[in-house]
Length: 279
Length: 166
Image (cartoon, rainbow over all chains, first blue to last red; front, top):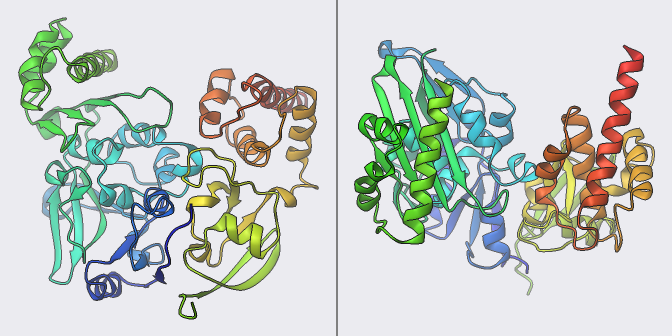
């Protein structure tokens, strides 16, 4: 099918983009790489009156390393593509975690155009970045008519396809702390076909230097469940006790005995085993 | 309707500078086929799944059905029509013939764009990696065996040549 007619603008600054979105009164959409929005518009699931293309905004490209406040962080611009991250054409604070996640997104042709900011704004609960950034403890930077604000990636999803992003706001980028040399991570996702959206995602990120031991149950119907202190769960899973995960799975809305419970528990076990293998 | 929105567009298509006026809703595949009359690019699913419409945008494989033409301002686009003199593509064409890597041919332009990316970007790719990389291009005729062999054949020939040159 073909998309319904729409107007198109390519602003050069974030201020201009926000003004265009505000003028659209809810019927204007920001465009990153368009790899989710394009299919939705061709299928007429989305019929915005206008698109505001963010790819010409210089500020949304590239990375910036910062040591303000004594914490070393990297801000990854919203228009960074999945392939940029997969290939390491960015300043990686995550010791290989983000490139590994990027390499598993859809297909190479999609990764060449799709952007981190676009994926976050699309907010599919089964997509990689909404889950990976949550377990990574990242912050998402947003600009709107009232200025700039920061949202913890763990709080980004309000529900399926509902990010903490107003209709007249844009994603500027994602900020992560630099992980230490002692950091370890694992990321396991279950797909029935390569490149499709995941049925289950599990991940662990451990960095003693940042006092971080987080777990994730992702690709749920709604927001991912971030386990802020996953030490107990991780130790039990690695000791071969899968039942230790049941309380977390129940809190994530997965009833025992269901297919969903089974695949998410298996994903957690495999992510825990992967982390052990990295030790 | 007289009030359809339109936008100016300037880009390079197969080495040629092109200026056009497009409706923003026109995707790159339709622009190439219907305004540039480059019908080598095939359209399958129009939702980014089948890979038939894969072309090179600024040197990298891109789904032309889910890329708006208007967002390709200033881009360099290469379609299957531009590869007659390309040495890698000539090798791939010969290998596709030798290994029976196509039957109806509908997926072939997209397959070749992806195959060229595999052999140039991943010189050490083995069969499992070729299959992984091909997962975004659907072929309903061949069962992929011929495709995987054809790409493997070109990769192996390139590795042998590099050994000889070293």
